Length: 487
Image (cartoon, rainbow, N blue to C red; front, side):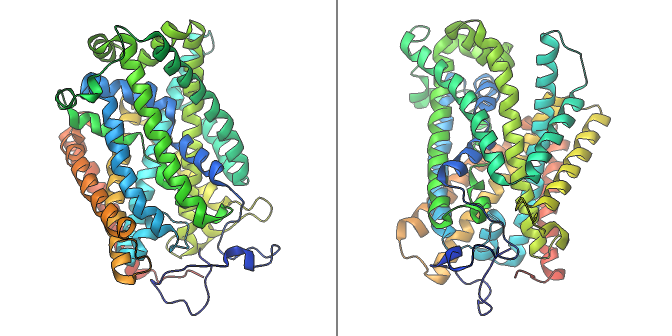
């Protein structure tokens, strides 16, 4: 996976001042992907994974309905602030981690190989869960859209299978093709939400713009823990900036810039958009409408402020938003498998790079097959695609990724305390410590309300927690039986 000199000691920092420019262009580095992605392209990948319209149209209404009501938009701001603290250490350490394994590489470098492989397995489970959850939502949303417009009523999993095939095709090709497609889809979905935000701001909302999000008593009302839970789920994927470091034009600059820019854009977009939706109806009416029809709240708001045409537009763009997200996570998962294949943890065949497209094609094909099996299993079990597949597996991913962020914060702190590779106090100690504390505070309500996130079953919540713990343990055990084979 990484390219280093033969004398590089395990666990040491890799400044790589010359970087890939020192190598002939015609001789790609073994075990590495190649590309020239700039900050904008990586940010587009991350924003697509965040699925802005899906969050504004799906998670935000649920946060308003069963979280802390009209003050819910502030939950996005709180989560963004905590994650920016996390990002300070994450970005600082990106200059000293040559591998494109994100959580896996960071935790391994900071805490050791056993926790690193534990994080790798936990990441695979978490990202697989969120991708399959998106197939459930996207399949059902497509089915309803087609039926509403007089088309055939095919099962949700057939639409999911079609999307899976298209995502697999893009994953097989060079990453820049995915980047262009994601950029087009992202512009469309963000554009309509910004138009809605502007319309509400210009007209002033129902009785003026809401101030509930700025009042601490309102934020603490209802179930703020559940509100935080839905808000933090909307940020999953921002950390994937490091996964694309091998394909970045200048990873030392691109990864930190893309991480900060993604978080700021996502945080502001979510906060303002959720605030606009609440203001559009007024505090009390917004909560009532969110409770009675959360799935149509954003579309109804668009129809009210932009015209009837926007209702169909939101439905269509909701589908494309979810497709963009599942394509982004397909690329992330393929690169995790590629990295683990090159390290000898997973079969070495997964570390193959396509000779023409330069893509992790073997890992992409396996990832497609894994997703197909899991989607098929959900369909065979008769699970409801949104209330069960999307909600339950989304809960798995939320808890898993938060645990990975906690581990990464600890890894950043230990790495810089041990190596002194960077002496900036804020970036290497203060911000990571504050980020760790903030993540632990956010994690408490997520764990406490986890049964709610997975359908209200204590038994199901316990089983999922055991599965996540088992994934980490399996990874740690693999570190003992799988020697490091990184070139």
